[in-house]
Image (tube, rainbow, N blue to C red; front, side):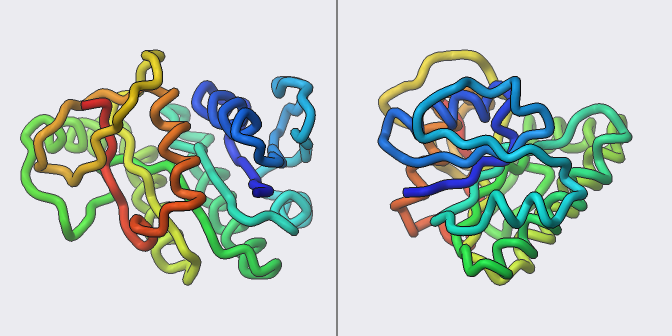
Length: 210
């Protein structure tokens, strides 16, 4: 497939690009600083900011799916561009008829299937209290994606690590049995699974290593 990746210069994004190329996909990576991307066959870089609709449209046009590993940071100034960027991505996908969208989320984006999980509740409460700008941004992004009309999946991450890719990933709801860590390699692998797996369309799975 031809896929467009946003957030490809981050640790998870670079692994996503690497795994996508290894699986034979053609990748278009949208980046503010393309020099941070590797030089590889079947990898095309499009330079631009998240507030640049024409550049985003160029990156999205002709792709089969859009995968975004853009996520909130502790820097307050980063929140507005992230929100605007997701609005621009959705608009570009609608304009060019690209339907499949997979984005990064956290348990701060709630889901009707969620149960109670004390450690997750504590984590979300802490973020909401001490990083309210980041909390509001991720919740708003969740709403933008859900209201997009696209074939979306919000992949909710726990604490990320640099651990290895494993044979299995625990795809669960908040409140189900499981840990609170996920390797970036597993996160990237799960993203790519969504290219051919329609079971999570319109859903927000919480994924962990175990």
